[in-house]
Image 1 (cartoon, one colour):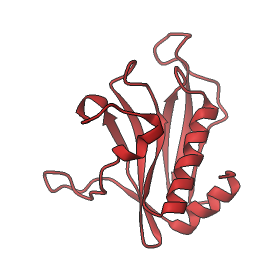
Image 2 (cartoon, rainbow, N blue to C red; image 1 turned 45 degrees about the vertical axis):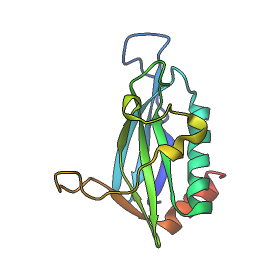
Image 3 (tube, rainbow, N blue to C red; image 1 turned 90 degrees about the vertical axis):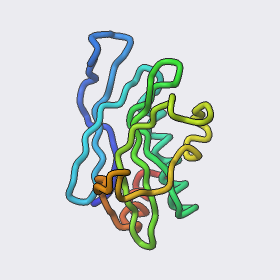
Length: 151
């Protein structure tokens, strides 16, 4: 399958040597690429992340616009940012980028319930004109994963 997101079947890690702040390793498959991430379980459980991923994929499929997969969440009260993977539909393709969303740069307080309202429009170059790393997968591959992931 050329698109998927899942936690790996590995023991939890404790990157800050704090038993109250476990993390789980996961992988995002984007065509031939494998992008690994470490999801903080301090505030969200694995199940909550998976629920957010299902919601993001469902939003992308139904609205054919944009959504984002959150892979590392810490609330604005406990963190400076979150890591997410915005997904943008363009015809039969989905372009996916890795972004950090810094809370102090937002014009309004962050809300998980309205997370996608904080997505910016897709850009393929930065302010210096350099290409932004992004991956492209077929829209049909995202649909196929959604069927297996029970969206």
